[in-house]
Length: 623
Image 1 (cartoon, rainbow, N blue to C red):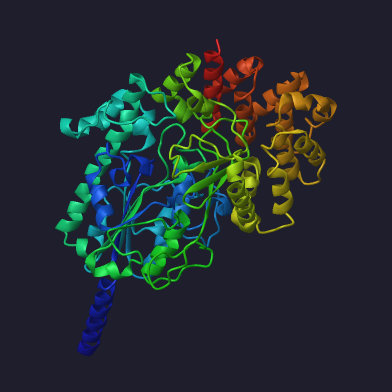
Image 2 (cartoon, rainbow, N blue to C red):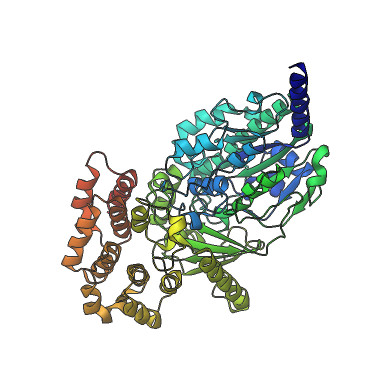
């Protein structure tokens, strides 16, 4: 018996010793922040000394990108290691199921003996999120941290700071910001309204400066809290054994940033800090800057491999660190889909310098109606400045229809003011990235080209991730051939879209209809009878899209009635589709009474409720 006990303690001691030979890992994640507003990325007005110190001593990445442009899809790409356009998790807080084998990646770190803690935000866009969280983390709470692990056990600890979230920087009332942010800063820490340069896509006025200063002060408070966490790590004598990751969940939570499929929505600050004990693990060295491309889908396999776990086959991202390090890539595919009540579909390719974005619903502007933004003072000020004629051309463009394609040189044009898609000098760059995007979409079998109406039906009995692999049910080549026409304006394209309205596949017909929604009304006049004949398509997303086109072009009464009925539908995805079409009609007046009735119902779907409010506000502001 004594020999058995001695052997047990010997093996336990050996296992703990091995565990201590592996690095602890600390993730510091912040909200809604682009690198443009952090000191180490060149902003001299920012006050971010703790972040800057990590960057100066560690590895600062200039080519790190969120896979999506809003929080729950981005966080789901992080936790699953699977891009949202494969998992079907791109629509913000849709919470559709993922396959049972797709565990949150800390689950695999637990199998290697790591203690996993999350303090405390999850916001994973999957069904039964509570069980998913419990499966991934040893502890996920406001009190979670490395301090709750067994003695000597290696840890993976996440700390998320909300202070730079869009609610603080634009959405919540100014009084709440004064209390929650300014009230937490000393006078000498605060950034004044005149202490920074305004981005050129925003009107430079005292009213706008008052609002935009919130970005800088929120980041200062965030940096203070990061400093406090690093002090605790030092106090617990763990700094010398811990690799630290710092990054944001997506781009800046301001108009034109968050929810927009451009560089300002995707690109994130990203730093990895290595203690001397583990500097040999950094392939870049330390105290350096790298332009190596990093996507959020890379982080799960990287951490599993770093902690000596087995990376599951469904994780296709790169391993960035350690013996299994993957070769760098030359470009990344990124995506932007529905955010709250604002439907959209954008796919992007970046090589780190050039950002090519394909807008598949360009009849909506960059700053489309999303209620969470519309209630903010800065958005209301922007709309007022637009009405008062105070905006210059780049500022007004935010409210205009988008082109089918964006191409920005983010090195020369960090605020993405000059679209190079029509510049003949950049045709070769445009053509290359256009081809790369199409190849990537087809290879990944991007399932988000299904309307959400369809994704919700699939979620009743299965997962979009698995559905997309069945070519009989999801003929992606046919679907994309129709989808890639959307946004291309002109007679030749319109003729092809009219032909596709009779296709046997309902999703192909949907994309033909959606593409026609972006065509010029004058061009559509020649197709009046054919268009009207399609408003009764058997597939509701086609029917409602065609009804929106026919009403907007011809003021057809039957089409008007279809829109009213669908907007009042018990199916929230059909209703939301109809309401988003209403938001961008030239004449929304006939729908006011119906939308007001919908809005007054109790227990509405939240996104439908918000879309109703946006519609009624839009009509009110027309007078």
